[in-house]
Image (cartoon, rainbow, N blue to C red; front, side):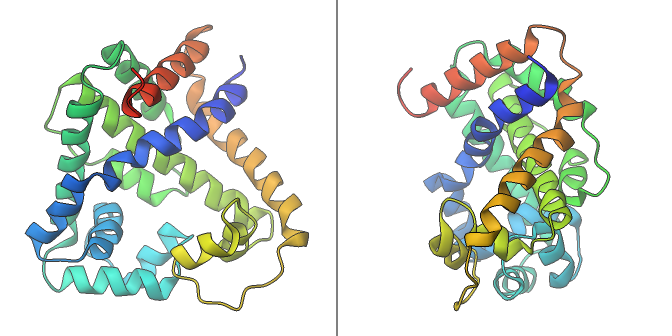
Length: 247
């Protein structure tokens, strides 16, 4: 498999596994312990790695979430707790989830090692959230935690590449969300208020942006030796099955 083929095939697996910890009830309880809402924890937990910046900067980095919705979560959180502290709590929850849910998955150490090589080789230019998260220190050295953190980082790398590709396609982030599989419901979930523009002319551009995303991310997968790309896909598939309760 070529690096671009591995990137394309791994993308849905990484996107699912890289955010699974954020939906865990224990992660949501951490928000209450910090005295902030679940939405504020999601926005600030994800973007808090950028440090003490303005909501407008956060909205630009996240891209696909409406600026007003970003500001609601970010401003509410920073009035109570520093952004880096929320990001640290988010990272701790990611590690906890990984140790619990991936620690006994098949060949977790190997999965973590392959993912780490890809993450270390990834280009961070134009991807501030990915770069900020890659600079965050990780205190849990267990294989499950390392795999979960690497999945979080690779997910941010894919997300950053997709945002660049969407803009290169001449689309706004809202248009990309509307042209995606969730359509209007996805736009509403990201805080964009209706009415929405028609999506018909946008679908082809979105597909082009998806292909460009794979090309932008593919250089990171060149860190893998021949045959390791297919091995990584097998391990990711096994990890997803394990997390879903099938293994």
